[in-house]
Amino acid sequence: MLLNTGNNLDIVVMDSYGQRLWRSFNLPTDMVLPQQPMTRDTKLVSALARGYLYSGFYTHFFDITNMQSLIYNNGPKISTVYWPKPYCKAWAYNTATYNNSQNGILDLKGLFVASDKFEASDLDQEVMRRLTLDYDGNLRLYSLNATVAIGRSLGWHCT
Image (cartoon, rainbow, N blue to C red):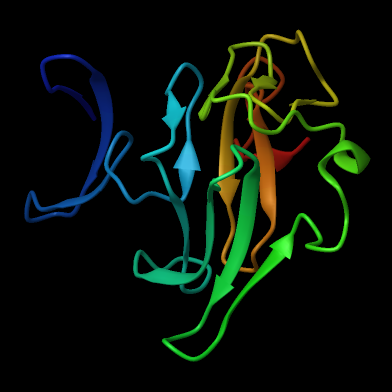
């Protein structure tokens, strides 16, 4: 269902009672959609398990040096950065640090533009995309090509 919330046109998933289960621009969320800004205030939080809407153990965010980071957090005693590797320097990841641009955006063609850059393997194709922090802690870019799936089931695949 599409919902007009003023500034954004959100995609909303509701249960049979009309309760909102998920909204595309709600925070925290586990995904970023094309043209949805990711800023210093945006945190992607994984789901607890496949098919669950409860928050899990993994978080993706811009750290204090403006680099994107992934952390594992299992309560007050266990919290660790698992990407990028803490002992590696930023330039090893081709990342610009201290650039004061804690902003990122996934464009319509599959290019994620931020201090860290990556692109979809099927860049420039006419497909829908979503960047998701999965329940296992992996940040994945999924694609959905509706034109190929005519007459069969439609499913997201990792690009």
